[in-house]
Length: 338
Image (cartoon, rainbow, N blue to C red; front, side):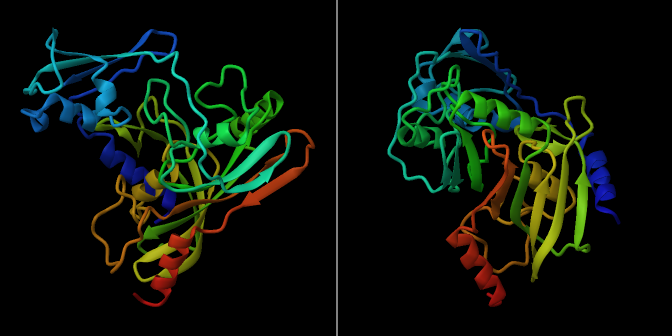
């Protein structure tokens, strides 16, 4: 069966799932606060409020949430309060417009640097940028960039200076950063026009039946879990296209070279899960059942290559980063039959 048809089948099975009872709404940055509201489902009844919020709002630390206004059914409460089935939870988060993002002496693996751009090899485990309302304000790629690039101070770029794309926290690999306004405009346009070559290496569970293929399936938010994405036919789903080619086969696993023609959140992870081949080590989308005797120490997804037109010279440039040691060692163990 063709990959595209498989995606269509998965779509039909998922879009009829009932939505999760709890929901959240984030107000735009122009407002003075972020506002979240949840209705407690049966599965979360009798939890302490702080434990419920830690599960639903992982971008905020518990200490930060103590600064927020917490209400249950209209009454202000403490984090130690227990929640009950049907309770209406409201959280008002002060907008941190005065928050300063500090430069931090975090080592960077620099692949290229000139007056216009910086190309880095982001390690797995590093968040790309702080969030606008106080989440992940230290230890991010932006904190490291501010230390390395003393002149990285683009107008209106407080939380994402120079960033024109991002990688998930657990994905490693090549990223380009703009150092000037002209470079930012040029790279942003190239990403928007799908002129950037984005190549990944991923190890997926199972053995693909075709040497190469193309997955065309729109991606939207999972109605049952707002942190996840799914192949969807909902109105907010966006076009997503992924091409792949087999690099190497193992027992119950396949190493694939993946080309993204669009750039949706979690696109590779969602697309391969939708056709029954989740990324090895993916705790969010991966299946728990596998015949692999050993799993890697992290999700096996790496942004291997990035190609674009240089913003100043107009030349086509391309940068690549080899697989990190822990992933290369894992492949060696698979080849040795472990």
